[in-house]
Length: 237
Length: 293
Image 1 (cartoon, chains in turn green, blue):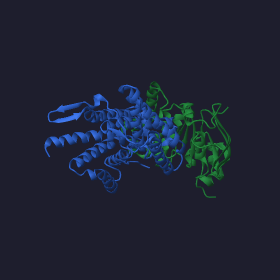
Image 2 (cartoon, chains in turn red, blue):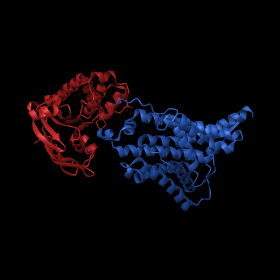
Image 3 (cartoon, chains in turn purple, red):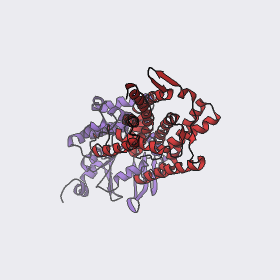
């Protein structure tokens, strides 16, 4: 059984269909990526899993539990977290406070443990622990956003466009860290427009187009797919 | 005017300012979290006055004070639940109009229940005791108000800056949705905010009315507006700003009265509001925006 199973998920905003009955699964211990253009429904998928967007129909099952209509807090408690699009660190809190708030549901002992683990992954955050998060650079904020999510000690982490607006070198850093997180046993569901780097990192890829999943396969295979090369990797026919 | 008289008026002003500061914090806290100007806040302050009058008819003063504070706090939480929470995802204007509605509801409800005839505010003997310091004389409440205000503000600042709940409050004030993703219970944090604001308004009410002798259903309107100005003056959303604003307005108002310009003392407050909004709309200590996108 997969850790996360999405069955025929449909989401509408008013009369507009954002997700038109998508089905996919995330196996435990894997990195899965959903790629697609703007407006394909990638973010909506993640937001509906976290209970931020009401679901029209379909089911979301995580670790054998149905998530439909569940409180976001309960979902976080079960070890499923989301790194939101655009980082969304709390600019008025220090780096350390941002991390602490990521572990809001953890007790003190776990907090210290998680904090050390995060500092090991991101030594830069330790250097800047006293600094207001709003004054960090874009790359540092992304690291903070990922670190903050890890503070909840998750079983599975979902990331919404971690490469957005970052320099290529920083993107490389972030993705190597995503791999390390995964190697430590955390399942990763990644959403990207940067199909190249996402497919290179992921075990399995799903391609989304206007509310539907149109293509599935191992990451490396999708990289070689002619259609994908044309649509997402900038190759001309 | 002799030095003693000036000091005497300053003392009165500081005391009035302390009460204003306590009420202004309620405006600033709620604005910080919900971006809502809680127009009902002044009326919560007025209701606290009535609670005290009724509590004191059947209980000794320490219990009456306790009852007043508890009931005022619960009323603040209740108002939020009933009138603001259902509008959480509505446009901000709707919740603002709802706040105005609550304000009028409280005023008219208390007119209906308690009539518009001023009710005498009971004297709490130890608060009214007169102290003599050299040439100056003041009742205990005059001296107690600023001291209590400072103590409560220090406690509040520690709560906001050093505790987990305070951290959650600051996070919620910036970003509801991301705070949810951290596992924070937004509704609880908002309830706590209203509880603190109403509690402080309750304390402010006891201190304010003890010096004023009577309560009417409209007693909350003008102090409420002035404290709102105090919060804007200090930079709405900023707690120390609201305190400074409260003291400033309290002192200036008292001095204007002392100088014989009592007709203008209320006008001054609103003149200050207009000037502040024109010259420095973010207030004295307005939120710095050092956000990177």
